[in-house]
Length: 294
Ligand code: DGL
Image 1 (cartoon, protein in one colour):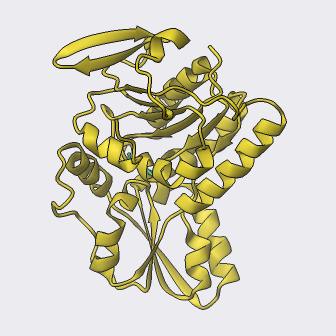
Image 2 (cartoon, helix red, strand yellow):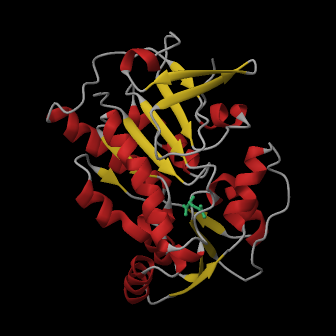
């Protein structure tokens, strides 16, 4: 099945903040947003599990014939972006914490991330570069063990105003090293009274370039204006995932992963598939993040 779509992957809802920033870059191409919501958060899991779960999602992307994939997850980027690029035939864009732009401004820079990202060699290397380059900055990394999970639950239940476990540290700039945190960016800015940075715009810019290259190489075509579909997925195991499962008025409808089966609703908009490993509870939240209304 060749769809030429753009895939986004995260452990759960965090990558929706990236998807939202990439809205323009994607244009009219079909979108697959895969949140492994039954197994989120990833940040405290062992590296082998993160690798295995991510490969399951990327195998699905490969079967869908996507043109470009975005790892809308700092944890997965930190743990295995090179491995993914070596394993799959389509271009893969990762997300980096915006440590350099924050450090350029000097002062106390606080990098918040998951445990796996904080412990990764990739982040340590990036911080070392920033520290050498911008001597006027003092960079501190803190792993927030509970934060991504709290945000995932809050979004799932439509309770984004609940309280979150943010570490009390003085900072002039805060770098969000986890895409979940971008969903409460304003709250974090208020809490620290500091300027907040995330990597979402950098991803959007890079995605635009990569799509342009793909169009030039004829790997995707922007000419066709696709029909739209809204499919939420509920499936216990990803391993044998062969169906989109859509729940409507209490009824489950299954769609084989074949082109004609996926396009079940015709609208003058974009094809947008929200996929997940568990139930999508708060559909309004997903739709709002992408300003996608039916
Ligand atoms: N949103 C992800 C990240 O950017 C994953 C957070 C998690 O699942 O722990 O790191």
